[in-house]
Length: 271
Image (cartoon, rainbow, N blue to C red):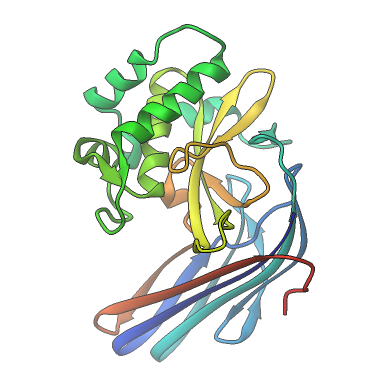
């Protein structure tokens, strides 16, 4: 499937900021599930190219703007050919060993409730079958309710509250999988709506490592494995590692952010 993507992030500051600095992980890498036809990131209308690869294999770039800054606009335009591989990403050539992704982080620290849910999945069936059951159990426990959590919400909090968004579903699944001894990592990217009336969105899911298959994607928010509707951008131990944009500003008072994501299927080139 050929996807054309537009992602606009518009920051505004209540008072002029003295300066803004950001690290961006907004460049998708080619893989068996996607071919990047074109991709452009602009900051205030000027192109920004990835300048390095972080320790997790993500293309990354940073920028800094001296004040006064009242507005900042980051725009992504791209076109990606996607392929349905039933969620199988495979092995990362030269990447970190899967065992690295067994270690908990502050956002994915285990809790008694998450561990009990993971243990209750049972041992019948293949590893793949058990993990599919785990995905369903996580989604059954954590309902999708927007605006109930934030980027600093830890897995245990969302689990106990029984509600959250895709980031929380991913963190709870990662925590549960690691408890079972399955390496797990966080994925950030985009989801093209499968229904015409649905909105496109930045999205998050998890990849779990299965012997014989390598890394396999699971999207507990939607109870599926990623297919041709997904664009994979960055991976990490949790949200903090794979966040599309992280930054700081000096002064400026309250910061507000408006985000517009549009994804279309078709042959029209990205501008």
